[in-house]
Length: 511
Image (cartoon, helix red, strand yellow):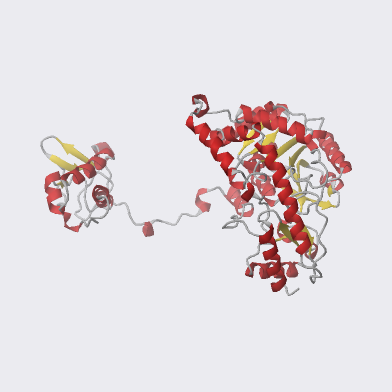
């Protein structure tokens, strides 16, 4: 029996929608009344037949609702005495009072309205140092909707052989290897790692093995792992300026002090990097500098490697779109020239397949592989298995190499369409550069004000253009108007869409 009188149960206030699940509605109604105190601890509930009759529903619906409440501990049965709102043991009773003034068992003063929930500030949960770093170094939300001209960083994934991928995926799930469905190696699927190593040896001249590769959830996770394991709070990190801001964010979140290093016609200025004095890590995009499009010269590559050897520093090489080379073979990366084990190579499938794939990899000096695998396992244990297995089969069957050739031809054609139709004699805008690699190009503008005007006008006709000024560090010494430019991705949409976008730009820019 209850310790003291409780409010009687009145089912009259329970309203049920006859077109929806009745047992679920009844369970929710009773649970709500227990939580907000209308059904106090110790209140006797009607027998299932009586409540069913009172609500004009089937007894089975009431039984199912009661069963769920029993399972969650909201109600309890007493042999020969019926069903009651649950009471806690005396030692666990709370001193919460309801309107009758009697002590209750279950805490019955919980608010069930979201409007009553207190607004908890992030500053009350996340320690101030981490919160400040996050506020200054978070990634913007990606553009919504399907790709359109001239979205940056998006390949021609409308050409991806989804029919082939679907068949390979279905084949895996029809008869999966039971071992592959267990917890896996945090470094990734062994076969995929082996095939990536073989691909890099043949296409990039990298003398790497499968044991040096760690699979990641895209290039961004690979960069973040480098930041977490190579950088102590306060360490200097040399990053290209202008450059890939998301990489800078990753290093800053690990406590690195970002040192913007100028980029000229040969790539990162290694003399300026050396002048920083205390950089432990240099992050570079040598095959196609992001966003200027500069290809790092051989002299600079050797100079950068010499810097790493001399200072015992590390080079994080992001080869994000190295497959796209339009004159000659893809250039050998820094990692292929490295003889001291100072280069960590970041690769991704996102630029040859589609960004949502979230499949990338690191090629590491042998001595770093175990630490990187262990660190990654703390976050994600291991990568999702089917994507790795299907990609391995996609590569082994020759689909990958054929797809790369097709993507390279498509990107070249789309590049040519953009360059041939680009508005000429556009006030305040420089001439288009030669584009020998990559998926985007950058054209100079004489002021940030003009840059923003052109971008805003493009937005009115549904054309996406990035401003070069957004790629610079906020404390850059370069005068602000020398940071202006337009960054244009040319691979995201087919040629007719590019031509249509160019026609709209000519109209809104009045060329």
